[in-house]
Length: 116
Image 1: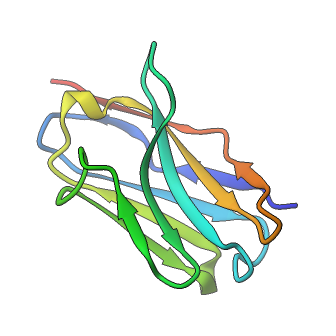
Image 2: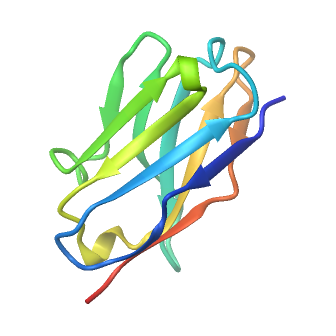
């Protein structure tokens, strides 16, 4: 069992930056993959970025070259640096961890609003 708590969301103007952080309640050493997903109003939840325990990183095409995911096993955390934000990035952002048995753990989400 692992609890995930996200932070760092808020209101930002287009072109601005935010950094999201997700902290796990226990060691993430055995977590095979951690990542960020988002869900905009009226849309399905979609992948933003993931990082495996081996360091493989994947990004959605819509955020490549703008977002950076980083994992810190010592701090039991995964961060998402978001630059050059656009209005279409507005969504609730969720942290997800995939345990060694394949079970998915989700955080409660943090709201990101990009608006002038």
